[in-house]
Image (tube, rainbow, N blue to C red):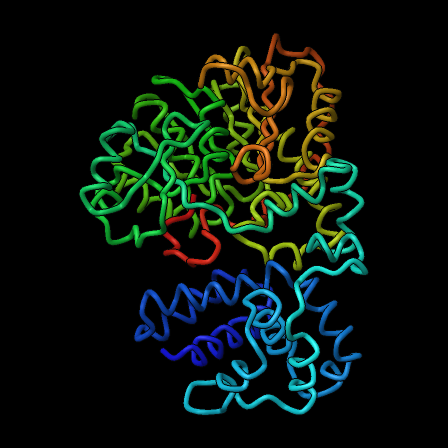
Length: 479
């Protein structure tokens, strides 16, 4: 493909993202699937264009409005097209002449720049993406409404945290200990000319030094490794799921953490993967077979209050709740998520997280643990939920994350004592929060469940696990 054809393809994908509610990686995957003639290098460059716009959308829009005095917005230029023009100039450092050469209307290339677009290109030439006059939310590539929430968490460190969250994510792998150890997996990858280094926190993690098409590698096809962010690996390790235990992955999705839990159990004991979407569990089945896992039962639930939960009250050693959330911690991989989230989403998710936690807690037997995980950075979805749960459930006590870290990974926790918080800026992982609760003696008169009898769904509003920013990998690579 010519450079102009790549730009045109990126504009097509961005237009589809603007016009619908589906995640950008899904839209791009469909686009490439219908155009199998597009090679791997072209897909990578198209993805880079798309993610460059999605990551910097707030600043690009600010510059377009400032430089064109809204002339472009009033004209025929779509948001996708004007943002791409601005990104090529401000992010990639292109010149107006270079743009004109690529926007020439030739076969597969964008139509020529209009008069307003030409004036925009000249106004932005030589500029940088940031500007002192930008509002703080724009400079940090945030929706305005989220700025107070994140500023209350990070304060003066907000700029550093958001810069890391707005960068491209590395490609992390989890070694499947049922089939290999970390050294063996590294050697297997090296034999296929893929270099990987040990991750600093997860003892079963590898980080690729350069991206590679994993789907075609023997190490991947034979189940030696799975794509999984290091933070996600750590969350599963802290559950301390051991061989012979009875474990539930309550919001299993496509099974990334189910695979990690099963590996920790060494394929012994019983692991139930639950979700409200049968198609997600079907996808998990393919991954389980590839990994050689045989101790997992997949169960579709109608809601978090499915009768199955009541029938299995207090019968599991570990209950893992990877709760639906805004997914801010996964913005490195899913930057479009920041523009789809709304204040109403946060309010609704906070209620659902509460209900899911209280319902899942019924499955935990005395002495067992409930593990609450989000890929969110907001206190409202993290510490506030943990504190509310402890206040409502007196038969549970906090199990310090630092203690769980010492027992499972070893050494001192890098992300807190009571709870674990991981961020891209501080730890090089996606943003993750982990809280652990241990059930003591049953309470004789448990409090009524909030919303008892309601049938609510378990949405997967957060960014999809394992969708690596910039590469749009195969859906099978979900973490």
